[in-house]
Amino acid sequence: MSTALPPAVIALQDELSKMPGVGRKGALRMAMHLLKSDREEVVHLAKAVMDVKDKVKICSICGFISDRDPCPICTDAKRQDGIVCVVEQPGDVIALEKGGIFRGRYHVLGGALSPLDNVGPDELRIRELIDRIEPEGIKEIIVATNPTPEGEQTGFYLSKLMRPRGVNVSRIARGIPVGADLENADDLTLTRALEGRVKFED
Amino acid sequence: MSTALPPAVIALQDELSKMPGVGRKGALRMAMHLLKSDREEVVHLAKAVMDVKDKVKICSICGFISDRDPCPICTDAKRQDGIVCVVEQPGDVIALEKGGIFRGRYHVLGGALSPLDNVGPDELRIRELIDRIEPEGIKEIIVATNPTPEGEQTGFYLSKLMRPRGVNVSRIARGIPVGADLENADDLTLTRALEGRVKFED
Image (cartoon, rainbow over all chains, first blue to last red; front, top):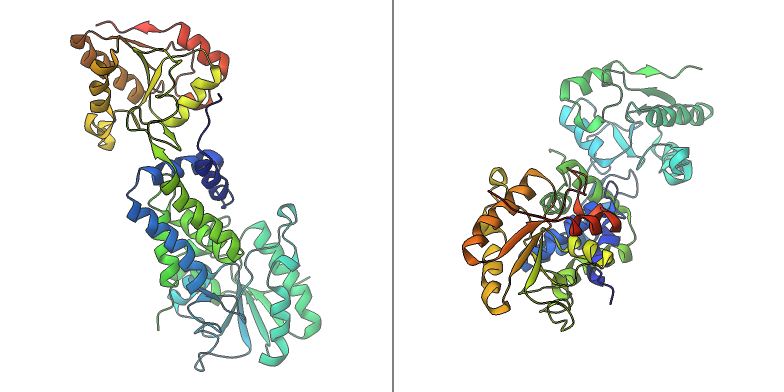
């Protein structure tokens, strides 16, 4: 008889290790943690997992997440039309909103171009951005992707894509430390970065 | 209006960051991953989380995990009585069983003594080990905790605890590289470590 971990533990390990940043060893540690937790705790987690899928909507216009579709930012009549700030993740919208300086609309790409990870334009919400230009009369796009090679490359790609469509594309200034995540930047740094945005040049 | 992440995302982030080795940022990345996954995938994860709690039993004798209580090792009549190998985690039992050299019983402590992390004797399954001595006629205990300061300390503690009870306590040899996890050791190293076990001396 070969002794092995119970199938339910292996199954949970399999599911958990599909998550970004979770290896098989970490997944097993999590499974053991749940096994030792009160059943109530485990129910909470299982419910939270389903709730995030069932209660949270991805905005069909901008890709931000909230409890409705379209999201409160896209339906806010007080915000400026024609100018869109493009970010990688929903958390980036929240970071920029905390600063409060930008009053236009947003577009969440869902990541950055990364050929090595098989993330091309079709994996990001770029088609959706193009489709917004005419109906919304978009004249300016501010690229606020992370200051990583992938983020910069994404900005450059958008710039080339938008020029023939008559849209100005700038990127937020490098006030943000290179290599860091946009989400962790402080309000002042984000403000300076928005003010000092630079037009893409060939 | 302050823009924030939806409550369901925050709730999932809270639950996930209770897990060992998961920070708030990692938890948010997992939440976003689930949000973008197919609903079926998310159902699989939620089900796997509940299954591990509902289908897996912690053996009330030895603390090993399997689909029944008592576990198949404790109920196996062909195994040797009176000799118990004490380990930290269920995964360690599987690692030792793969080697196949040890044919006695096991006892899973659920961790190692670590005063800094508030893990004292009462947090481990030490009382349960003491309670096994008389009914099972335990004469020998092989300590196979990890070769970390906590693991060594736990072995020393068990040795002092068992001596007045007439139980021989040894620890597996340092064939295992110091600082590494028992679970990752290869079969031969585990075999050598079992063969070269050393009696605790004052």
